[in-house]
Image 1 (spheres, rainbow, N blue to C red):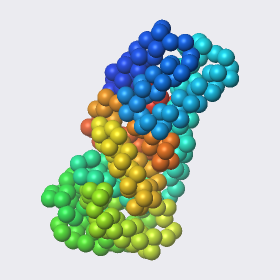
Image 2: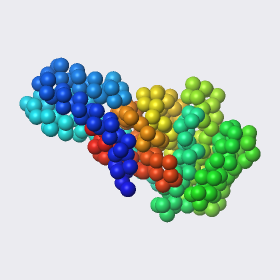
Image 3: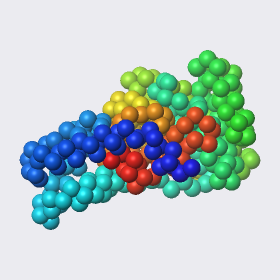
Image 4: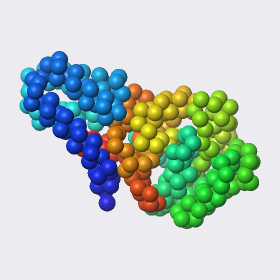
Length: 298
């Protein structure tokens, strides 16, 4: 099933709500200040940030006025095009091999499960994969990752619970280099984005990879729970400042009632969504597609 097919039901309520509100808007308002104010409110009510909503509506206004167009379908299509352009302001990174991908995020967003899904995705691309259990603090995190590694049929490097995460990364890098592995995925402990000492730990692991595996292409992906809405945007802003993010993996996209914050991630933070989790199974992870996301949203 396609990405769009998998999220169609999840975004159906949002799409119906937004489309209904826009139909009502066209019935009672001609294009003018009141129309654009309410269009802005419709986007904000779907978790688009105020700044992004204002920017998008301003673009719609300029093009619609410039073309002297008042047709509902034209304005709707114009809005879709601008929203898609907003998503594409953050270009998708080109994954080159060998690569190291470190997944970071706060507690409870599903990083360990996502590692298993991402590992499986690369296996489907015929790449060799190694996972590093650098979440050495959470109880049973290592065992949980080992289960997902087994499901994905990939190797795992792990130490005892409580070990130095950077030591795990060092050993994993050494193993990946020795075996000529295409992809090294690093699981990290969940951390509150306000804790400086935990952010410094991420930076330490970052330095280990850069020093020991300079020939690898190194990517840092933030795992975000799509059901948290605007809070996910706040998390992304802080992590971007701390570790220079290359992309985002959305989990639980199939469970969100609103997805508008995704436009703010790409438009304001310029961080692309790379993968989207669209279910609980190991194969329920897809490359993000801007056009299909917009079609599912409005």
